[in-house]
Image (cartoon, rainbow, N blue to C red; front, side, top):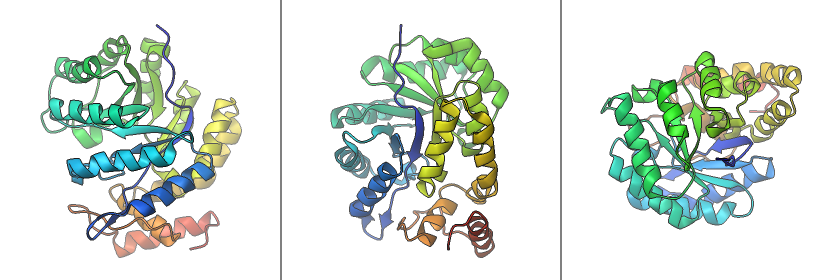
Length: 296
């Protein structure tokens, strides 16, 4: 069974530009164009960075429709469908398929704290019923539960499950995944600070938060890694390491939305329970941006 990677290189987990009365779709389109113009290969909408947990079903569907229209023939479109309600995840996957998405991204079910057997069945249930490439999303710091290597190996046998967004921060785990699954389960880094080490182990790129403000830099970083030029990639990452860290000084996407506003890339407001960045954190973020030559 030969699986085709959904994308290689940089994929932006795009923010959702909320206004007081809903989503600003004109701003969303401009932000998507900015990503394409700076070399990004793919976009994730309705993910963690997009504050998906606060979207209504109508907003979720419209986000996908608008994003597909704007990215068609330019970038791959991946739709976050994750839920701790398996049937709800299935409905979102069906909607993404109907809208013409290239793949779906499905997080481990939070709060319920199922078993590894339950995780395998949760993902398999959706993959069995919708013929669209499915990317697993492993982020135990957010969900309270992580996939095991054995569960990933089992899921890698499914023809519709093509890869994993690996955001545990455990480099050793990623190495074990690569050994156990090979090209039956492509790996993408889910953390900007793990991009270079994970790509050195065979990951194909990153699903990035930082590329909301640094799309060209993240695209170049991935290109260097794909070329096998890890020394230059490491040097490029080192230049931006402090800024990458500052983008997580508070809960994502609070800092990246603040950084976008500082760059006049209107990111809209945050929805509760998230709140605007604190004064001290904002000062540190802007200082980190200035340190790499960003004029803010």
